[in-house]
Length: 139
Image (cartoon, rainbow, N blue to C red; front, side, top):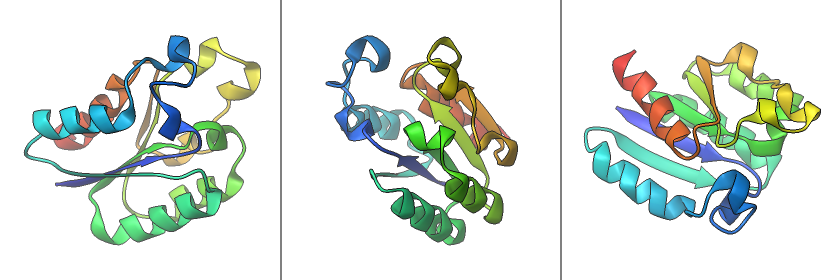
């Protein structure tokens, strides 16, 4: 099974950015732990601050991956274009968020992607990614 983790804007700052919200661990370190604990899954990951690149990666992944874990960060609440890409591809997508978006600002409580995803996992810190991956494994 091949899974792509696709991270959006500012997630390259994990470990430094608002650690009270996002924690103290950077994503590369966490990704290594995921690869170690999920040896039977071929994991890839990409981070970009660009909306267009997220769309390109979603379209490319549709050909090569069994599932996509998408944390588009702030684009979740603003990007119709990414929502259209999620809707257009056949590969299932699980939307994840590290923080509990419902405990934050009102604008973070709306996802344009959720209606087009397999599911949404919110508020379990970095563990949200593992939960999403396991949803593909156990179907």
